[in-house]
Length: 210
Image (cartoon, rainbow, N blue to C red):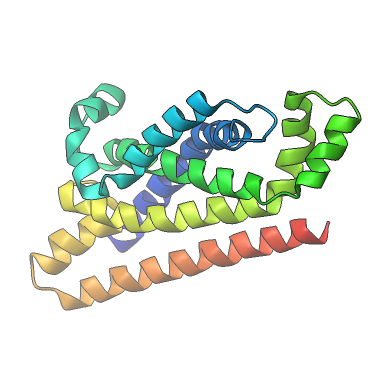
């Protein structure tokens, strides 16, 4: 059961991290580039998008899972199990990724952007050839942090039948008073977090060297 629950957790976290990255990266880029003084300055778009992202980040995950059950059923065809848990995990991670991407882009030296503008680069060329490459190590660390958070969220998903290690800990550990199962699931979660963090740090270091 521990092996199956671990695979389910890795599946949930892996898929939701990838989908959240695909959706959150352009949102974060748009948020950073439409800020005051940036290459696509647009205060209206920036404020509206920022407000929407803030709303998404302010909803506790356990409440979000319950609130979007109809949407989860629409996308996954069910509201319980590993497949269903991926939907709220992704929804919760998208605004988190967007803010981390925005922060990574804003840390880039403005002189690099100004140099690209002086050479006649268009805004989209600057995004593709300057901003993303310059921010790549920080983006890797951002996605690492997202994956670590999602491991914790996936354990919470077990409270509503989301599968994975959280579900195993609640049904077989807590409800059956099996402290040994609780300890084993916690130990596996700790190992997963350490492994993901170490991998992300290693990749970021290699990119910084380049």
